[in-house]
Image (cartoon, chains in turn yellow, orange):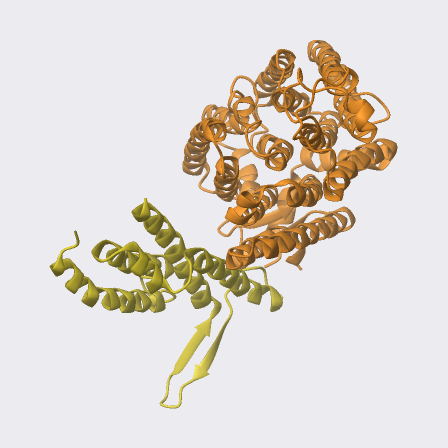
Length: 137
Length: 496
């Protein structure tokens, strides 16, 4: 009962949504955006796939089960918080290093981004789990 | 520095994450769960030792200074509660590994169990009232799924009642937090304590105190908002009801004691009389409800309610001795109550049912189980030499010193009725001749089931014999509660 128009557009939309979700995630530490919105966008991409084709293909598209995504996210969150502890500061204290780039400027990598990425994974996992389970009913 | 305070939250969190990663291998989850439960126990013991030797510990999460960031604070009371959570968490983890069916174990029991422990520890450690709300929600969500997991109609029905009532209490709690913020402009509990001492409008503060009383009173299952508890606690597997019975309502009691000793202390006469009346009514209704019950776990559930009355009786008296009694009583009750639920599980295993009328003869068949029942049961009824006796003694003495003779009389009367109830279980389950058994019942139980049940009973006995040190600890915890300045000071010097 899926329509051809929806199927074709969603094939185009899904990669766009995923790329956009990553951009939103990477903006997170310094600008509006972040893991939560990014995770929702990514989940929307898989929801679109589930609606336009079928649930099984959306599950295959995720590659791992939603539970594993949530677990990976939670583990990453814990670890990113622990970096602060290892540096002798309280849990979740943001730590970052600046890497000088060869073409000038610097790249700042920190636990804030790792924490955002963990939120991304947990939100993607949780929403995908809910949507895919409901869609299968 | 600050690591010890974070560990009781970090360990269960990381375990839950690993269990989710190992979603398909429930045996791996089981091993992880057991290891982590004992790690939590060790971390809790280390925290208690640190607080005992070096005083109140506080840390600012993410190094954001108070009152803007979230404080984690462990005074003696918090540390003792985390310790007892660790003990119970380990005991029930062992019990559930040996008693739960495969379907539940492979469908998320372990991650949820550790999320529940994380919520409980977080609630005990947080120094921020909104954060307390968050931990309550973490706990509620995990407990709701644990309650409903793998269930038939009875379990779902119990879970619905449980979640509806608890969500209502949560919304009252949240509304109260919002109003409190608009009055005081802060959510940090130590900061609130300082600001509300000189609040311009004491009337509003009293109204807020009442809202918190309703919210935490529902969570703690006090009169008249207790009915969700006996409607739901007898439905899930025994391991789940044991951990619920031990910990969940006590988090509500903890929150009551925390806010009414730290934040709402101005208006003590009016509020504390009200709490005293609630305490008395809770004791009486709980124990009267229990008399009519013939289902093992339903009967115990009503006793949970009744015992909550004793815990808030010490709070209502608001003397150092009364609070010491409350603290010791909570510790004793968590041990004894969970122990009784674990015994009910073993009795059901051997007798094939939870129905007291259909059980019987277990004294003859399993004398060890009879002993394991008698220890917590007599402690609950308040007989020496168990710790329950000493906890009740402190409360009664505090009541007499405060001149509240009515509540003392009620407490003593309810003790007798509790004894009566426990003896009813004794005669029905253990003493009367064994009825015709269903041929399918099991004759044996794994070593883990026995060990976890026995270790809780041994602790009840040990705390009774070492009543001196236990009393010292509770007295010092109460001294910190009565004098909130030390708590406030600790937060202002918190590690960043």
